[in-house]
Amino acid sequence: MPRYSQGAGTRPVFSLLLSILIGLPQTGLAQAGQEAPAPAKLNIVIVEGDGAINNVKQRTAREAIVQVEDENRRPIAGAAVLFMLPDSGPGGVFSNGTRTLQVMTDSQGRAAVKGLRVNSTQGKFQIQVQATYQGVTATATITQTNAVITAAAVGGISGKLIAILAIAGGAAAGGAYALTRSNGGSTTTPPVTTPTTISAGAPSVGGPQ
Image (tube, rainbow, N blue to C red; front, top):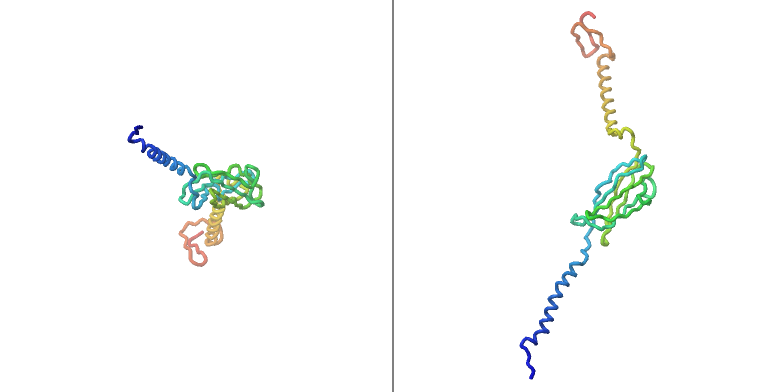
């Protein structure tokens, strides 16, 4: 008559429970490896380039940099950022020779435009910026100006400062003219050996001249 060990009947059940327990961590790891949920919205922060004045004689422009963030102001890496220049008027072309350029954000959530070549048309223009990540899109605008940079600005003296100095000089000249008029309209004062008395009317000078 065959003999059975006491625990032989429980082995299949134990093996089944063990396989289930082993499978649970693997399921958790699979869930952890899934892609993070899409952000509720995107924010585009203009880091550099907004308000820049480009020298049309040199045909170079200041570098434009934007940073893409989520709704909690956390940088987003791997977002696609599209930069677009106007088709006509003041503007230029990107380093690829076209008016559109797509750049992926780095680990800091930043995308930069390098090598923008402006045209010779003076005036303001806008660079349209569009960021996309996991189906979420945001837009922004970078405003720049094409202008002829004069020699006065090269020396560190802006045109605005020159205008202020000119106004100040004109005011000083006007004050000197008014003072001359109050003294009888002559810039030459005769020598005076005795005290001079000035009245509200015509000036009277006492003592021999």
